[in-house]
Image (cartoon, rainbow, N blue to C red):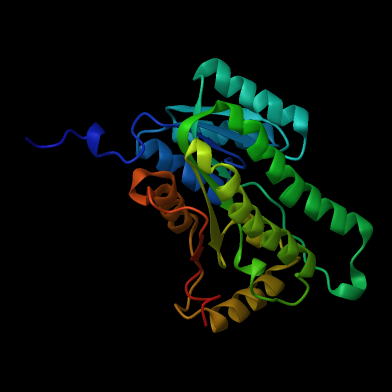
Length: 256
């Protein structure tokens, strides 16, 4: 007997949360999760972008406005998920910020902002989701090649991503009794609004792109859906015997 369309979907009936789901990698992942049969809750700080993302996806999606570094906003996110669906099966802890400063220019504000959003915010994003996980589930943390490969001016940002990789290892052990898998996805250079926001001018952007293309073995930047495909794999039963790993999706950038 041929399988029905719904039975072929990899996340059929799953309840997922994607933080930072209003643009870039988060939006692409939320779209792919819905295509694969999941109901998805997404977050974003800017209401207009969040509403646009919900409209773009169109079905099986709820937007919850909030800042992932604000614990009250996280409580509201998970209260909404509990009220509407009663559980979570998949969490993609995606939202983060990037900023580049050489060592001599690093300020307290720069350091605190990076670690507050990328490390502290991620930790409590995961911790506060735990009561909604039942027996099993998948948590995917968004890391970066910067966690293991050095780039000029990226010492603080890279340190936040190295911390995320360490979280995945430790939480794999902490959560093994609940059969919750924890993995890190580490993108390379991806063409997203966040990447564009790193530069001050079009000329600077073109220079950055030329530099990146010269060191990426595949000779191009990635696109958000290429990350979304890998996240979907880690969210699904196709990766049922995979936990604690760091999966690089980087065109070979950090591999050579």
